[in-house]
Image (cartoon, rainbow, N blue to C red; front, side):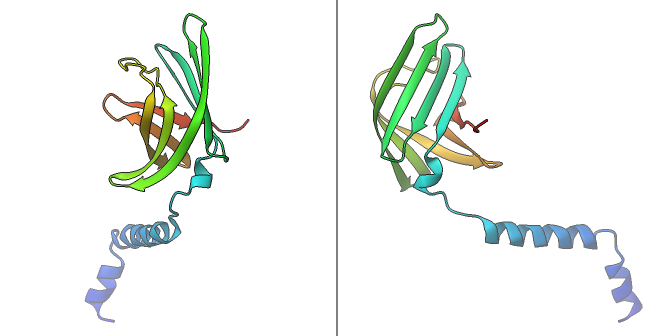
Length: 139
């Protein structure tokens, strides 16, 4: 090695750059595609209209529970499906009516976009305004 090669290797930038490249390679190799079975769980969200939970069950049905701020409660169940399409995977819930502020609460087939961050799944009704159901972790 020449003295020029040694100075390059002792540069303070070499270790962080090599570490970053290694981390990116490992992360790319370890990423898993989302499966239907990974979605089977309960999601929830509290907002100014109340609290909602959606439980996606393995048999292809879901249960949607809403508790309004005035204390009234409703629960509906129907079918759900996992679709893999552009712009990304989604959960389609049939005969569903979200209760987020600004929605019409009309029942129908709603497509909820899926995003996984830091090991938690979010089912997005809308990105703008930001309305989503967050995966609940068991206690």
